[in-house]
Length: 138
Image (tube, rainbow, N blue to C red):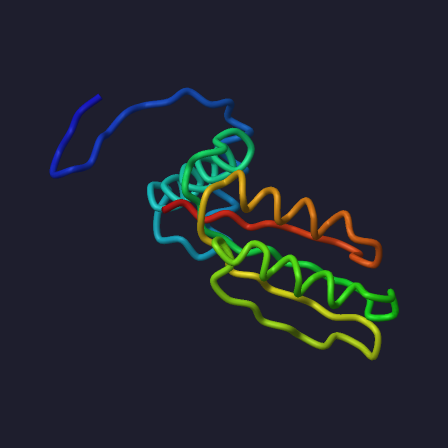
């Protein structure tokens, strides 16, 4: 491992098929080089680890959920939870997808445990079709 100007160089061993797939992916995504693509892959790996393991770590990201308006009281429950978790909810965007279907984007910042708790409570509500969380490394 060598260090130069704040950058650490190291080598890793990977199966050729994995390297080929990675090279195809970063090139098709428009990256200029393998190092930048690997950097972003490492960041995603770290963010995912924090999301699944580290309760007390700080995390930022977005909760994305699709839900149906025809479920009685669901919209009020979603809003109630956003207020209950105001310590981690930074911003909300509401998108009308169809007459009875909406998309909610909830920007969050805070302790992993609280963000996970909010996500789980939202996902468990009857009428929520799908929920995804996108974590971003700080």
